[in-house]
Amino acid sequence: MNPKAILILAVCIVVACTHVADPTTPGSVRIVRDQYGTPHIYADNVYQLFYGYGYAVAQDRLFQMEMARRSTQGLVAEVLGSDYVDFDEQARRLFLPASIHAQLDALSPEDRDVFSGYAAGMNAWIDEVQGKPGQLLPREFSDFEFSPAQWTGYDVAMVSRKQERLEALAQGINEDGNGRAHVCPADIRDEDTVEALF
Image (cartoon, rainbow, N blue to C red; front, side, top):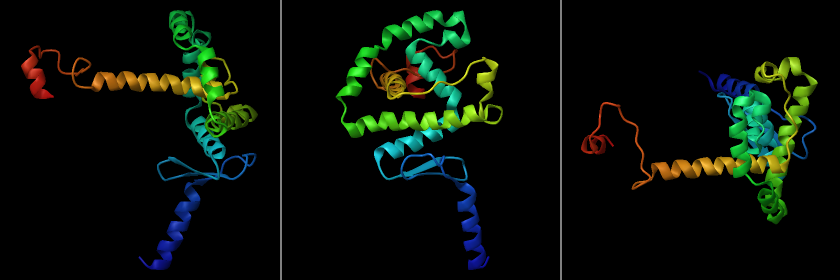
């Protein structure tokens, strides 16, 4: 293949993989999606970077993020029904709003920009979805007959805290010693065979 054809092909690929965030994006944020759809965010500061990140995540996982937020605030039963009331009650005991608010208030302005930028990016995409629900609203919202709500930095912090707890749990399960857990066929019962497998 000649060099000119390679250059033209490269330019076409870059153009095809580029998605620039909504023009109302604050400052200079650019979201580029590669050939696999993975977003790459380019920004001038922390707020803009997390704005782009929140925007891209909302594009890809709006329903999942809405349910993650609801799972931290004890609001899942509002969508999935009364079978989730116990789940919601447990979530309300685990995640204390005053503690999360205090932690957010103690952050430096740049660290708070992570949370507020992410929320603003989520909200920018939600605004676009609400403008064209027939085209952009994920089907799950229609199936469960509700709409995505606007996000705050607090919401982002709550979901982030839940993720930290899940990762800590996974870390404890995967460590050697008393926390070690393995999955193996049910017919293997003796400890020596299990140890040999792992």
